[in-house]
Image 1 (tube, rainbow, N blue to C red):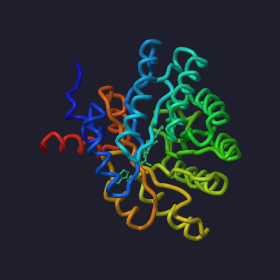
Image 2: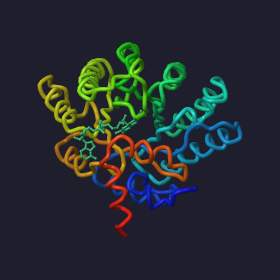
Image 3: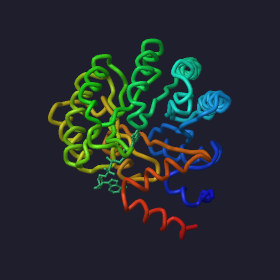
Length: 283
Ligand code: FDA
């Protein structure tokens, strides 16, 4: 059974690009940049992955023609990582050729821990070839991140730091929120020191306040990094950050394959279930 879209609309901007454009424009008008995610993951057939590459290329062109202040975020399992690594890398390169031509940017989202190593390997190859047009995501809750973050920082990579959204066992990831927050702070410091423009992705007030204080104390300019949040969450906080001179970007997911993304949002915060229920009663 497929849930109707009305359930997802709290977290998903639309089922088509056209339906999503007004929401992107409205964020851009408030000084907030966007990264657009055409939802989907774990593609098993080459024909579907091939079609996805074409759709992403079309999307980069549509963003460009509409003059939107938006990059894109993608998942490598949409480009065939479950099928074959070399095939997936070639698909990413096709997309990055277009991103380079349009002077745009592609962020590789980070998926579950079975994919971490391959995602980093493919990113490193892509970074050598496409430099500023490609970035990666690192999850603070993974134990391995203490090594990965140093390697990526040495490269000068464009990194989005988040806590991590997938259910992982204790041997792979921290389970305790205060330990995850401490790791998040330590990794933020490394990124601020070593990389040109870190992206700090969290809705957590404690971390947002800490970043503001730390960068203030260290005299790190507000233009040297950006805050990122998910569509449908804390828009007022983002507006306030922009008013206070910080850079802000919202991750805007859209498309018909919204269920796994929607489920992750419900699982990570019980209040999100209430948001969805209340949306059902609003026009
Ligand atoms: P968390 O849910 O841990 O909440 C901590 C505290 O923050 C709460 O107790 C509350 O005080 C406050 N808070 C949080 N949400 C609030 C709200 N809506 N209203 C009021 N207070 C609130 N994950 C991944 O594995 N791979 C990826 O590629 C990405 N990409 C990504 C991009 C962007 C832009 C973001 C913001 C997040 C991701 N994530 C992700 C998801 C990320 O890993 C994580 O699961 C969520 O951001 C939830 O963690 P938070 O730090 O945001 O707050």
